[in-house]
Image (tube, rainbow, N blue to C red; front, side):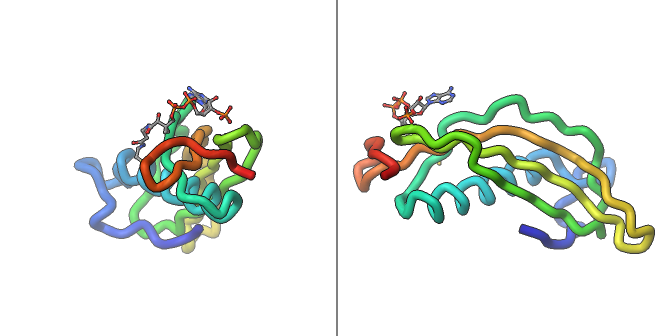
Amino acid sequence: MSFLAEPNDANFSGNVHGGKVMKWIDEIGYALAVKFSKKYCVTKFVDDIEFLKPIQIGDLVILDAEIIKIGISSLRIKVDVSSLNLIKNKTKKNCECFVVFVAVDKKGKKIKIN
Ligand SMILES: CC(C)(COP(=O)(O)OP(=O)(O)OC[C@H]1O[C@@H](n2cnc3c(N)ncnc32)[C@H](O)[C@@H]1OP(=O)(O)O)[C@@H](O)C(=O)NCCC(=O)NCCS
């Protein structure tokens, strides 16, 4: 997933708000979990989120997600967030974390991935 960090993503210091980064992490994790399982999934657990460096407005934000464990009803997904300063052509790693998604049925009860 990649897109430009926009002015309305900013916090009071002018960099990207941490809450926005967490939303994007949840979105890419959700997309990968549903694409893989072909079932509706909910966020169960977010592990060790670390904000390494701030993201500047105008940077290209790049999120990468990878399944690292396939459970019975759950998927553990690693998400990396980096940003590219388009003028300086310089990339930095901003954040990494692990998110667990659980596949659920229409009543919200966990179901098997496969
Ligand atoms: C998701 C939900 C249905 C799970 O039901 P549950 O009966 O509590 O499920 P369990 O505790 O057995 O956990 C389900 C899976 O998550 C895994 N899990 C639970 N807690 C975990 C944790 N802290 N770390 C890693 N994995 C975890 C379990 O190991 C299990 O995996 P498996 O089936 O692959 O072995 C329920 O907790 C729920 O509805 N949570 C709210 C979800 C939500 O509102 N999310 C935010 C909006 S999307």
